[in-house]
Image 1 (cartoon, rainbow, N blue to C red):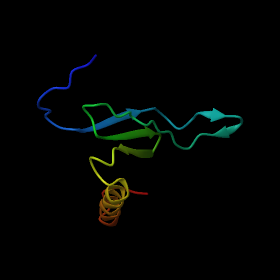
Image 2: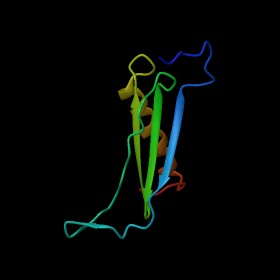
Image 3: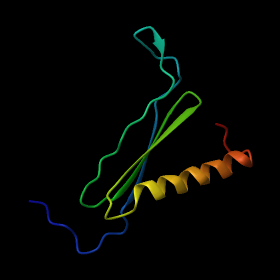
Image 4: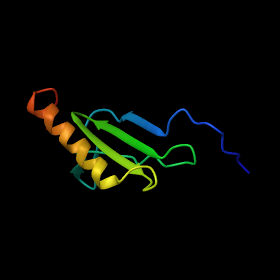
Amino acid sequence: ERVKPLKVAGVTVVSSVNRGPDDLVLAGARIRFTTGFPTLSPFMGLVHGLDGMGHSITMSVTTSPEIVDADTYVEMLRRALDRLTAIGTIHR
């Protein structure tokens, strides 16, 4: 049986995976994006996955309703990405 620590430094994790060039083919079709969904644990209540292939990046978010409202949080991330797109930092 695992024992939870009395204190935790944080509950947010960001996982990043570069899956290489976008030259993969599945059933005759080119794969355009990829993603993974990092899992929650008793010590992580909000996890992000950033998975890249070629020039595409896919972001996934997994959380617990006890930590954050997922819909509100994802909308906040969407607005932040929109601002970065508007100033030319990223391209969609």
